[in-house]
Image (tube, rainbow, N blue to C red; front, side):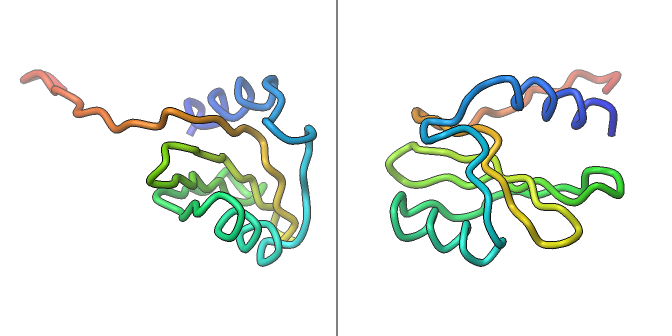
Length: 94
C-alpha cells in the first residue's frame, strides 16, 4: 500500500499532457479518454480510503493515470505515450 501511495505522490509531481488537474465526474472523464485517445482501463487499485486509481492505455501507446475520490470526482494525475508491458522475472526467494 505504501508503495502505491509513493508512486501516486511521484506521479502527482508531473504535469499531464493537458492542463494540470483535469477533473470531472468519473463517467465524463473516462468517456473523454475513450473518445479522444481510444484509451481503456487495464488496471485499478484502491488508495486507502481516499478512492481508487486506474491506469488507461490505448493501442497507440498513450496512457493516463486517473485518481477518483469516493465522491466520484476523477482527476488525471499523469499521462504520456510509449506505453509498453514488461515481464517480471521472479527469483526463488520472491
